[in-house]
Image (tube, rainbow, N blue to C red; front, side, top):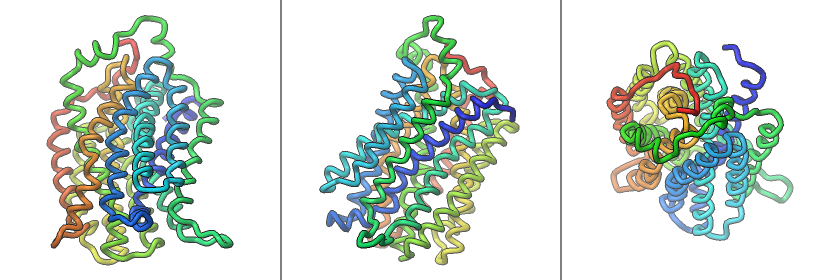
Length: 405
């Protein structure tokens, strides 16, 4: 894969933006139990923060996507990263659950813009033959962020420095770190060549383009709903499952999630690259099917080693399928709305799947059920659903990505 220095910096900036976005999001998944204790509520009530964050991402995808389509991918990406960094850190100062939920809602708006801006900037800047691998690499930013959150939780949470003990509030202050990426983008990342070229001629409007592609939009939203159930249904409550059902300490919870996210990175890179050879649809199909034999180990094992092995294989499947999506959605998207449409359908699907966190938590804590049961039920159903839905997808592997049409 031959990329210029500028293209490599573009890929790096987008990867870091998505990784640190995910880091901010997944910090919360390790802290649900402790936040619930401080605010004197149950875990499902705090899990509404996951729902609100995910539900509002489609709003941010639209707002920041329109900024990106009008004024450029680069300035919109910088603005978005600053917003989610500040809002993530402000959660540390929440005086009560209501304010905490409000701040996580606003964080969701900001979080919703990053993926579409970063992926469109990269896919419009690199040669077609590199899209499969780079797609997998970009999507690996998400499990890398989860991995980083796992490491931070294991190393920092509950540690004492002098008279100060690092609790959940101090952990949220780490959310200011992504703002540093903006300095790198400002200095080293060029604007999308396709966007620059498109400024030389008039472009079709948003609604005109959407009206001409309404079937693709509806299909893509359904597909991304399934994908978001797949990822959030296997990730968001897994730390809580390990804490509450297995009573593991923070170190054990941390390393099991580290192993899971190493699997996710392997899956994203492997199936992203494989999609360049066997096609986007076939790669997603194979990756999704791997989840089914992983479920018994992942959800119903009793020892840390077997749970970690199951989590490793499960996330190879989940992020292997996801690793194809940045390239696939950008290739399907009409050029004039490429900063808006992939992100919007992604986050609209996210909205439809956003109640998964509270749903799984309530299902898990219902009499006679368990977190393992709730996790397995969602993972199994959605893996099969993705295989069925993706077989109806058009495929435009290698499509020339311009903005003009």
